Image 1 (cartoon, rainbow, N blue to C red):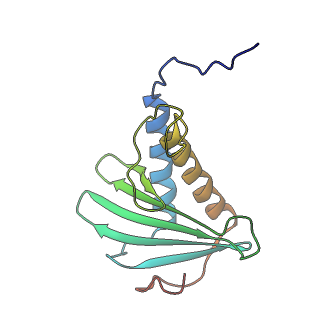
Image 2: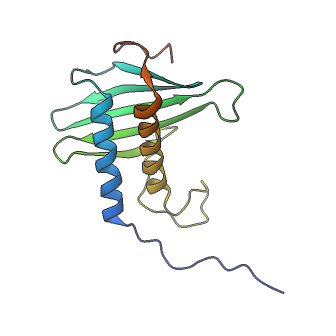
Image 3: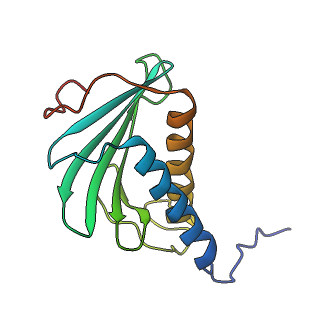
Length: 153
């Protein structure tokens, strides 16, 4: 009889990799966002059959909170993904702080857990954000100037 052994070694956050991801995400967002966005404004990008909406939730002198929504065509296996991103202007970092539902992400999780998060869930979400933004910069185009309503997303 063989037993499946779960890796009992605790997951250690790779801080330098995390900061590198956050720094690159900040630079990507700086290329995408106009300088004059205000609270409540939204920018939409078309990327193939997907649409990325970036909404400014809160703008402060040193930080900004954004909500990113990726909508796919209705026939896709998943149709919507959402991330909440905090931009730290003084440190030039952009970090995923929550995902769909607004529940804050912790730096690491014990596995297995009730939410079935991976041990490095936050790191994966930050890399995923980088993939979205890179694809948007490569293949996307802005649909319009910033809007004040997110109802059209």
